[in-house]
Structures are given as structure tokens and as C-alpha cells.
Length: 279
Image (cartoon, helix red, strand yellow):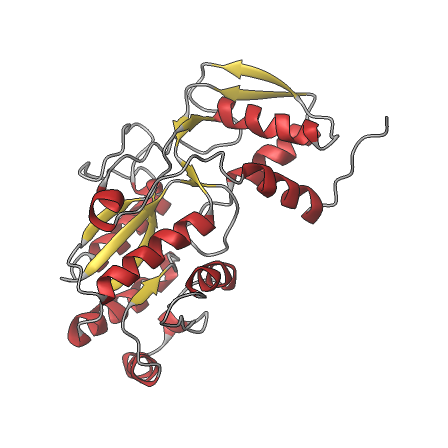
């Protein structure tokens, strides 16, 4: 696969109990010549390629990789993002035509079109992500942004209008593992798939859930001021991804974004060195 070290570690953990192994390409894999790509793919006996490198500068490398996957009949799973949709679009179903309104969205959509030129390709679009995963689809992670804002402002304005699906990278990894297992068993499910959770949330709902958990850990947090304005301070745009293809085609069960949230908040507190306020 071609991706970031952080995402590789997350995916590797999800592959541990399986009968097949994961191989990480070098970070500059998409800068390699076609011959060097072939050498790697053949030397490692790759059966499925997973690409999570969405840097616009790697567009030519992605084209080379897609061409080789077509020649060698290698299925390709490519990670993308809700950012292919413009901010004015809502209810982002798998059948909705993307209309990006910024450079990032344009680059992501161009990559998607390149990948979907293959007969055996999956484009997996991500919603808001709970934590960051460098060089995976560009989203720095909502948990860190909300936590920092709650701990460093007397009042935090949060929107009850801007809403979206919110998911953790381990949950995304489980989806990819389910897809790979079935592809290797002959599944013929290709095209665009949306990853999301069983329940969507507004920025206000998520901020409230995180604030309660931070208070439970003895930290002082902002007062929340709920607004009906669509442009909140912590999310860039709505990410209301909809669709059933992951469940209907691959049997992936959607879980609530609240599952595991307490543990994620506790890890964030530890990693960032926060301590409870004195009594």
C-alpha cells in the first residue's frame, strides 16, 4: 500500500489476525518510475493495492500506478474525502455528482476520476475524522480542534446546523479489511463507497459530548454558545455522507460515533499533557 506511517500502523493492527499480510510502500512510492513500481509490486507479490496518498503533487504517480494496476489486474482501493463536494451540497449520497468549490476538492475529484478508470477499483470517501492521520485524506481531525478550543476559550460558538458523519481511523481500517477479505474471495463490488457512522451529529452535539468527557476528567472547559449559523469555528464544512453500499455490498456494520469516544478523549488528554484543574 501507499500511505502515511500513521495510517499504516492503524491498518496493520487491523490486519494482524488475518491469513494475509500488509506491505507498506515507501513514502515516496508515487514518485517512482513505472519500472520501479513494477519491481516492488512483483517482488512483494501484491494482490490488492490500497492508496491513501491524496497529495496533488502525486497526480502523475497515481496515473502510473493506475495504469499498472490495470495491466496486472490488481484491484485498487483509493481513499478520498467528502471534500469532493462543494459546501452548498447536502445529503451527500453515493449517487450525487461531486461539485468541488476549492482546489483541494478539485484535486481529490481528479484523483477519483483517474482511479475509477479501472475496472476493479474502489473509491472510499471519508467524512469528518475523529483524529488526524497525516497524508491520509486531508483532514486534521475534529477531536483535537474541539478539545483545544474547549480548553482555551471562555466561550465557544458551535453550530447546530453544520452536521456530518464522524469516524475514527480504526473504524475505517476495519472497513478496508472487510473489503480486502471479500475481494480476495472473488467479490465484484466496485465504484464509489461512503464510509460513515450509524448516527450523524452537528458540531454542537459533538462539542457537548466532548465537553462532558473533559469535565469528567477534571478539566475546566468553555461555555458552549449554540448558533444557527452554518459556518462554525471548528469544522470546515458539512460532511453528511450518506449511502448503504459498504453495508449492502460488504456487510460493514455502522457504529455510533460515540463508541470509543471516551477512550479517545482520555488518550488525547494524556498525549497533550493536560492535567485536572486544582480543587
